[in-house]
Length: 124
Image (cartoon, rainbow, N blue to C red; front, side, top):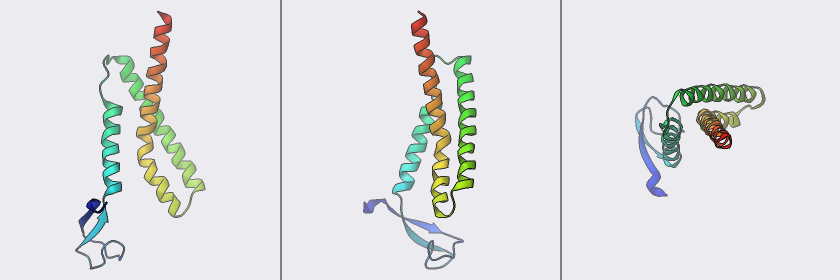
């Protein structure tokens, strides 16, 4: 996957990890993780916030409550992570933490929507 390597103009970094040549230099990075994250975020935003066929007050309220739930759960998980995870693994937790709000929001919104659609079919 050599085509995923990119040259990035690194400025203000004086560390050998980021820029071995000095403050203003080109460094080679692997862009695979960046591309996957960008594509995933765009897709998750489209899935999470696309308009439903029937967009009414119930759907708007469901979106709001699902977003509120996802933020609460995300920060609860972050609080637990602050208490129990230290060092370099905490960076992985922070990386995944960026995505958990969208994951929890999409999961809860679609679960409640599915459950209410099944209840409506059983009432008829």
